[in-house]
Image (cartoon, rainbow, N blue to C red; front, side):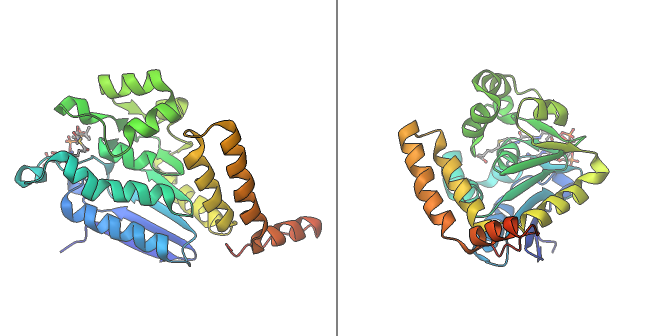
Length: 258
Ligand code: T3D
């Protein structure tokens, strides 16, 4: 049987591909379990210094599998806590960069998953849809956290309430996407970026994520203090020594991620 999640790791980059193309990679129990295991594997493997999350076929992810959930005995809140939250939290907290490469429609929790990336890339024909209210649900899996922070509160409210599909250019314009690439260039551009990230100072990237994860919940004095203590750790790293030495010697740094 075909696995609903593909995992490939090489040269410092792990790529996780959602693999239920017939249903636009809708999230059923099996896919969610495998996705969680794949994300944890990438997080724990020291040889992995950048993670890519993408979808197979014409969709990135259509959110919860609406057909598969009919037989579910659990309520939605329990499903979210047990199956979705560990994935979103692991992506945000893993001390290495996560690139979400949105190759097609990202709807419902699929849009939340896309926004959980540190860098969100999209193909020109990708689209984003807060599908939740169309079926009588509230945005979940982090959408009400990411949307106001990235796009502003007015846009977050309109996207969530109106549930209008927006295209990749619009998502880029309102701050949900870092860069839009031609569809046939997205995979190569994603691989190029991930390969670059895997050569960079991974330890500092982890600390950058820690700082930004705390930013909106901190006041300025607390955030200044957080930056200082993270900088104590960064400046003790091998990569910092290498970065300074390479600058002074006018050569390319050889970061080891430590
Ligand atoms: O209780 C809980 O599970 C809590 C968690 C909730 C989290 C959520 O994500 S709730 C939101 C769930 N997602 C949606 O409501 C989106 C539903 N899908 C759509 O609105 C549309 O499919 C899209 C806008 C995403 C794409 O439209 P389009 O026209 O490009 O494709 P399509 O023809 O609608 O879909 C293609 C196939 O995928 C189709 O199957 P078929 O007819 O070829 O056999 C369609 O049924 C299937 N599909 C698409 N989305 C889902 C799905 N099957 C199951 N679940 C889906 N979410």
